[in-house]
Length: 235
Image 1 (cartoon, rainbow, N blue to C red):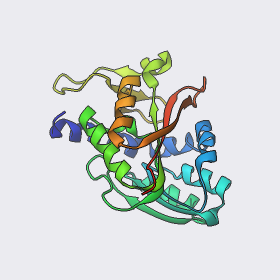
Image 2 (cartoon, rainbow, N blue to C red):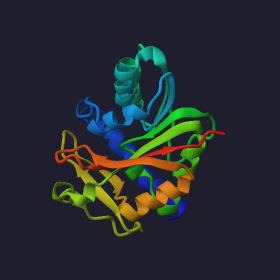
Image 3 (tube, rainbow, N blue to C red):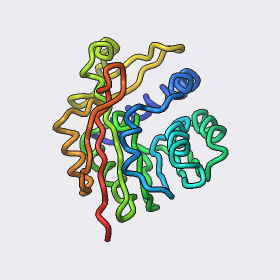
Image 4 (cartoon, rainbow, N blue to C red):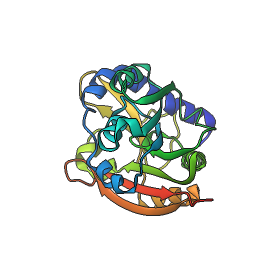
């Protein structure tokens, strides 16, 4: 996928979150059930990079289970309104929040015990760009640390396929790329890519890390997200 298309798709999603920040926040208050399955692998104290942190609910989840005093939390997101909500929610946690566009400016420094990518992978345009993105995130994992990511399997479910709308004729996308409408509050559309089993495995390989767990969880039928938990071997 060329750079112009990547930027265009990213712009669609930036506008989507600008329009829907309030309703998105209201519908994203509870932790994902799949996060509980990560807890046995986490040993506090823990430094965390939350990529696409939104309103900070993953940070709250970790603090509630590991203790706020055992958590150093660094969150990136490109939406100022959601970052404001995260800042208020995480006021009792050692937190650094940064406005950053992950598609155009992925993190290039830092080493963390846990790098988390939830609810965002489907917004990274381009197959090669997703491979490069996962490799960059893997580089942020400290020796012995973990990279946890989830791919939203929306196309597996009729209720999400019903939300697909046609692409404009003047945009060239790749297989698995869709434009989905939003049906809560303001009208908006977002770009989403469906990561199937083959691509999921390819993304794991691209990280160069060791997969120690994989499972599906979340949603009405407890299988809406495909998780992988990867470890960087100790030096």
